[in-house]
Image 1 (cartoon, rainbow, N blue to C red):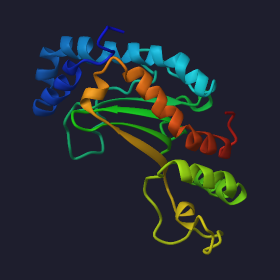
Image 2: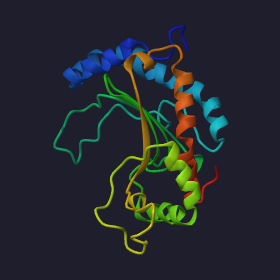
Image 3: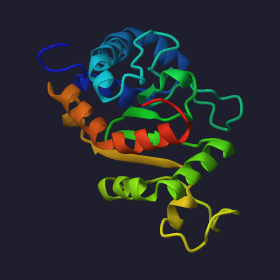
Length: 224
């Protein structure tokens, strides 16, 4: 980490320029900036976050490998998209449970860097049907614990229009039983991301969001 922090303003500037020039020829001509200003600093951040993450839960992983680790690829999957832009215009990392290290839909912590749109998030995003049912069952069976999570965090994500089958339509947490996502997030300013305190700030935010991650993790039968 440099004296000014892991992430410099150049990282966000590169992403802003990439958004205006989302072409392979431009990216190849500016690949040095991608490596120096974005990829290498992000991998260092992931490495330095690892010991801090282990204090939140030793079962979650910050993997700094250049490929197959916590950092998402910059390349978009355009196979099923009308938008054929080859590159993502944000940088992101997902810190997942070690038992589900390759599943983006598993419980975890998330960092998203984008000019004017940086944020941290945590929880369970787009889980499959059996996983959703397990979380719903846990909300019913451990309502007091879920109530504490709800008091400390704002839960976000998509929901069903109608109550799910098999659950009490009069349950006090009906709106949560209708959820398809169980996530929470915190907005981050560009200046905050470039601060020398950002590693500490992100760790603090993850600790704040950890009750939701713990609840969803244990609901799926995973160790916390």
